[in-house]
Length: 391
Image 1 (cartoon, rainbow, N blue to C red):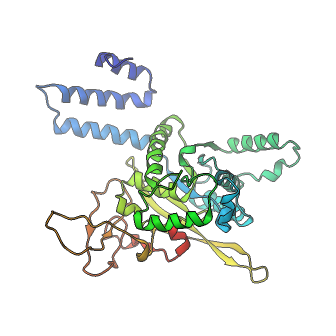
Image 2 (cartoon, one colour; image 1 turned 45 degrees about the vertical axis):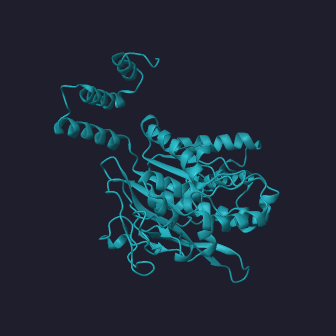
């Protein structure tokens, strides 16, 4: 097909080269376009209602029951940031605690989040720490130790993957959900200074030297979501799990729920192996079900941290007040009102109307909420963890 191909031939080509499950949607879309382009016939409310109904039915058919976003387990770089000066970011492994976190997250995912026997498709960032986290998670379905009798590592790995596939667990890598690029080998002092500058410049737009900004991550994640939506139809699975990084999770949420930049800037980074669970609302949309955060405790004898349990929250965490920055936008040239701190609501479903902001008279309101202000179960919790708030 070329740019001058007649519209009716383009339509026929689309119908012939798409699966049957999409043809009804294409037919409806083509009919609506033809109606809109006619100078004599305008689409009626019934036409638009029919179009929206077909679209909703199609979305409801392809949408998975659950879409789970999981940050990687504790990495060597989380423990010692100086390692980034000698070890590539993409090669950073997870620690012993990171493995324990991944295994516990897998048990929770299999036993409490995913319905028993349902197939699961994982999409994983290609970084070492995320692939290792994926391995720890899926050990809940099949322990790789069962294949220790196979001497060759690659053959042992392939045998394990084959067994997982038999159990309904499949996976693929996608570099578009990789970590934000901070440059190649990183100077810890320089990166620390850059993060301080980012706080004053704005976390979404600040670009690291030879690296990326959050807005760059937003762009590539947008293309990933387009592909993900198509895969819901082409590779149907009842559940999807993304094993990725903190920034990618925040950007994915902002992109899907259409958060404003101010709303994105409020979000705290998920902790290691924290899970954000989105569920199908039955009408072709995903809504926030909540997040699962692992609990850690320190062993009195060894002084090392270990996983002691988990808590499920219906709330996303936001940053402490001192880490939230917002530009003051004037309403007119003569608007000389003092800079106001704005409290921003975070929607949890795409069916909500555009979010509104309220300006308290002093500081922050105590009524920061997710979604509907009347939903008392969705009150935002503030994160007082300084280190987690800044990364």
